[in-house]
Structure formats: C-alpha cells, structure tokens
Image (cartoon, rainbow, N blue to C red; front, side, top):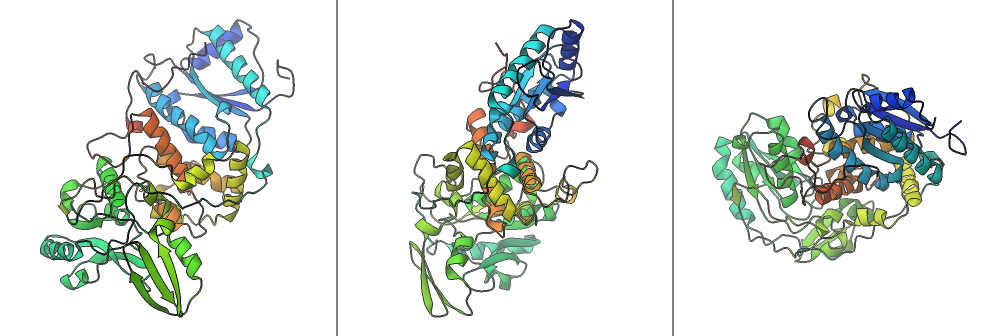
Length: 482
C-alpha cells in the first residue's frame, strides 16, 4: 500500500539514469520513506523522453506521470534537458485541451546527491494526485457532440476575391512557365462550386486557373515531391506560410521554387456548404458578389455569405498576403490589429475538463481512422514512416477505439508543435468533420506565449523553437519545488 492514506494510484516516473535515478537510489539507501505508487522507468536522459510517452501513459490509465532529469546546465549530455524543458512545458499546456488535468503531469530536476529532494518531490506529487483522485478515463466519459459558432468578426474584410489581378497572374505564369516543370494552382473540379489542384504544364493550362473562395486546398503539400525540380506555386497567405516552413526545415530548396501570390479574402467551409446544398443532380449556376456566393442547384438558390460560411481559420487570419513571394499581384488586404481565438478552440476553452474528455470521446467515435488529415498536411512529410503504421516500435494498435484514435491525433499534433502554420488542411480533409485543428491551434498558442509570439512559417531564416533552446528560458520555470 501507499504510505499515503487511501488506495494506491498508478503513477509512472521517467527518470534520468545519471542524476534522478541516482537521487532515487540515494533516498532508498538512506531509507527515506517514499510512496509506493510510483513505477520507475529509467531513461538515458530526460531529453530522450518523448512527450508521447506521457500522453500514452495518461490515455492508457495512469493517474499521473513524473519526468525527472539532471538540473539545467548540469546534463550528462550537455543540453538534453534544455530540449526536454521546452517540449515538456508545451506538453503541460497541451494536455488540458484533451481533457486531461495538467496537474497529473509534472517534470522536475533532481541530482544524484539529492536523495532528500527526491523524497520531497515524489511525496508532494503523490499527495497531489491522491487529492485529485483516480484519473477519469476516456472510455468512461459520456460522448458529447457540440458544434463551434462560426459567426465571428474577422480581422480583415472577407470577400470572394473576384476583383483581383488574375489576368496579370496568368500572364506572369505564361512568361515563367518555360523555366519550370509546372506551376501548382487551382482549377474547377466536378462543378463550378468545387475547385481542385491544378498542375500547369502548358500555356493552355493557364486558362484553367481559378481564384476565389473555393480555392480551399493548400498546394504546398505537393512541393516536397518536386524537390530538386524547378516548380512554381500560386499561394494564398496561409499557403505561403507552409512554403516558408518547408524552407525552414530544408524540405525544399528556395532556388527551385517560384512563388506567385494574390491577396486572399477568405475561403468557404466546404463541409458546411455541401451540407446546406444537400444532394443535387445539377448545379445550375454560381454567382459572385463582394460579400458572398449564390449557388443555384436543381433550381433552388442558396446564399453563402463569407462572414457566415468562411473557414474558422479565416476569421483570425493575420496574413492574407503572402509573407514570402517572388511575384505579387493585386492590392494587399488590410488587417485590423488584434487577436481572435479560432472558433473551434474557443469551443473547447468554454468547456470544463470533463466536458472536453466527453467531447473527444464523441468525436473519436466518429473517426474513420482514414488518415486523410495526415495525408493532407503539408508538414507531415514522414508519412511513409509514420509511427501510426510502425511495428518497430509498435506505437499504436489497430484497435477501433476512441483511445487509439485520440492518441493518433495527439501524435500528429505534437509532431507539428512549433511547425503547424494553421492552414487547416487536416480538418478540411476530414470526411466526418472532426475539429482536429483545435489541437494544433492549442499548441500554436502555447508556443506563441512561451517563445515571444513565435508563429510558424513567418521567416525562412528562423529556427523552430523545439529545434533549439535558451540556457535561461524567460517564460519557463525551473521547477524547483520549493
């Protein structure tokens, strides 16, 4: 039994081999009284503790997880705990959006000589968990389905972009085309209300190029497949950020990519558009005005105002114009200074932890595990070696359970920490409309708060925060447990 009163809890501890494990051993040699709830896993360095270890433990029934390593500036491997500090702090701010109390996870620093300190750390953490009680389980939560309110005031005017300089863009592409393998843009799909990617290889293909609120796809997803070849790409503001992030990570070469840009006035949430249209036999016509689109299908007209039917990401978009471009056309869109919480994230912010757990239970029951979100993501470039498919190590099972599906979404979100540009392709590609973008948005918010407003895909010369460290972090505590 635990030395504390009550039922013994399931607590997992990841301890650095060189310091914290030695500190725990020192406490044991000194016969210091310790709770027996903790199950210790020895690791070479706290820098080797993947945040997914913590998420996996908590989703699989652990009541708490403790990570302990060498003190900063005293790492056996010089800088392992500096990298760990950033990753684990972001994880601590990410857990609540899943419905997991962040008090159930802690990280700290204990040296091999600090047996008394180790006793204090493990006793304090165990007492905290006993006060919280056993952790709620995802499978026990009653499924909850809610929809975000998308009616918001945007930071910039939302429109249909029909007065943009499309003819000038087409002329520039025709002029540049002989030097390029192709130019990636958009064209009409099955009908005038649905656009799909276009690969321009001849001057005649340029006439197919479209621009407007139906250009929802992010063409940057195709760039890594053209690495080493000269290509062009037409981008919206959010697409350009994905291109910049690919440049930051050296997944494409700047000299190989020609970027054409037009200012974006917003794109439609096609899931809601299609839901409103319903099943139709013939699409009669699509009419644009400055504020929205009218689609007539089977003789019935449906009005879609951009202020009501834009994608959630468009309301708070601060980069309607490309942050990086070789050739720009049109008049830049003015952005009102300020910040808007994305509607999907605002929905989760308004919930309690119990409601969030229930929300994700309900959403993950709907998940098909088709991996469309992964395949549509421009930054998910390791899909041929994805941990969701790996059998060595075997990260995930093939069980059709909400827990396994939510763990996959946590994997995807944490792998995009400090990298996600908020393009929303993951959520747009989801065939059942699960608001998974909120997970990425929460991490992006945490990264911005911790690292001086850092936003992914803004500067190709910047180093993503999780690929570096500061010896003294301004916004991260030292976890001294005083």
